[in-house]
Length: 226
Image 1 (cartoon, rainbow, N blue to C red):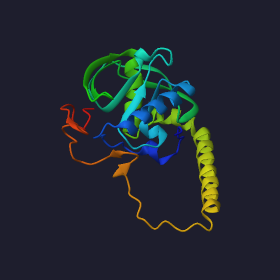
Image 2 (cartoon, rainbow, N blue to C red):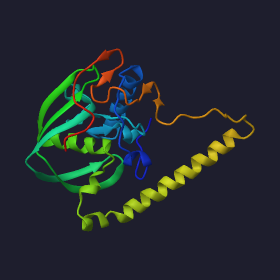
Image 3 (cartoon, rainbow, N blue to C red):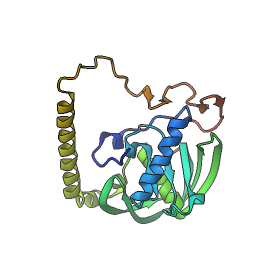
Image 4 (cartoon, helix red, strand yellow):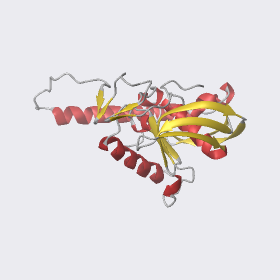
């Protein structure tokens, strides 16, 4: 698992609801916390590691020695927003880029925990900002999308550089795959799309009721009230 950088397509994909909590998901959560701390981050969304799933991890303290602040947020919904404040943000998928983003100062949210429990909470200040930033990722939105057009233009050289690096990496991997596959029998099995991914089954069943694996957890619907 690794953090993907702009313009990886996963960053613009709206994440699909999770309908099953299992060991594969728990393992991904552990890996994501490790990646987040290693990169000196305070939050990391699933599609930032190439998983089109609706969850993120966060620790507003940014300190692995303060696990009491860790949160695993599954299928989140923002019910209400209040207040507004502008502050600087960065993004682990947009390295070396920072900009002033205006966000709500107080949120009313709902989500599921890794234990399948429903949480209804009011968040404020920096915790609310981190939540909104990661929630945006699940919607395929980046912090630069909130910036005025003139401010976005300032980042064009860096975005171009990241795009060139992405294409170069993609070509190198494609070349390596071709060399590794030379002389190997071709796998003609049809590859599935997003219906199944590392143990998670993404279906439309239970989208409104929040069905998880072997139990039924009533809670927020899949459509955020924003």
